[in-house]
Image (cartoon, rainbow over all chains, first blue to last red; front, side):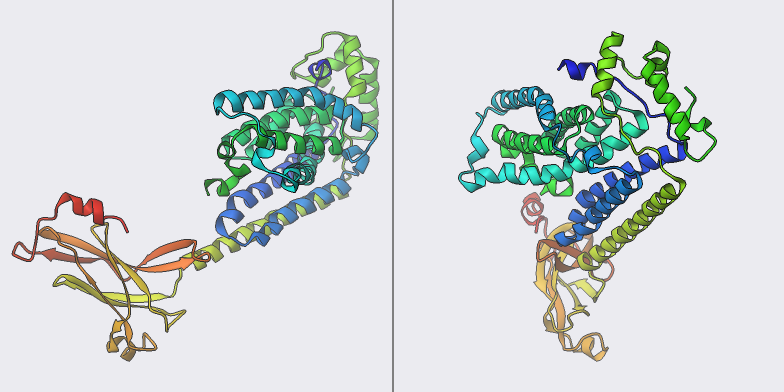
Length: 233
Length: 226
């Protein structure tokens, strides 16, 4: 924890104004694609394949941007050398968050933690397995793209961490409990990524925390983990 | 440290970058203050800051060549255009499917205890359209436009003679009323139902004679919903 408390900001003020604006535009573009997918595509059509357009465009932008910025897989966090360090940094806040979620579930909703919330067998494994794959994708977008560009814009530090967490929570509108959980998770993951960029550890953490979330809070509160227009049914 | 805007070339020179890093590595209070700006400083000792510097991973790739920046800008503009066109196409497709533009019809009369008219779905000329009647904004009944109306076919508005409707008016208090007739349209695999008004609003009067009745308040509560 002391490592995180000693976090300090290092603005990257070596970037020309045009390039700085471009960084924000890149972030806004990917966020808008996600919002289009959640709030427009899923609202206007039942044809799920239509999601390919905004998601595909966002992925294409992220990949092209990676190439333009000359970022390596190692820089992005697709590496193994700092895996255990990232895990160590994640351990304490994850444990704290799990306890917090269990307490909220117990005292706010009056439910005891249940492993996988009634799932059994392979279905019990489904949450963390799917959570890892989906988590890796989300963490790539959130950390390797948004967090890194915010670091280029502002430098590392709490301001960047906070904005990453806010953006992550906004993408889970209007699901209130999921927004709260993703804001907390966003803070932790963004802070850890800035100190030990490892997407495998973050994806693992994402999967575990999703599993903890569905095991501690009732499904009614989580709205089936639905976000965007589909949250309303 | 100079502001980023003070760099005259399109992007900061590598010399500037090297100089900044060299200044940073000296660990002077001045460089820390200028780099941090007004950002929160949670560490207090220089020793701790140096330890942090070793741990925090600085992002690279902020510097873009003019060509790379131009390419990225083109990509962002292109993406925005494609997304705008996609959303527009999606919106048009949604409106086209949810609010069919193919209903044609007329409310001919609202008198003698019934609303009479015809309606055709030109996209499915052989289909019988379901209609709903609303009086003064309240649901008052439903029916199917399947009654004999040879004049509709004779006018070239339908492929056959069975597109008329006659919807019974409920007991109404004396006075002026409005009748809305809506064609019912299902879309989204039946998950979505929309009502599209047929023709204009029909205004009619219920005279104060034996035909008119004082409607109990319960009528609107029990009959007011489809």
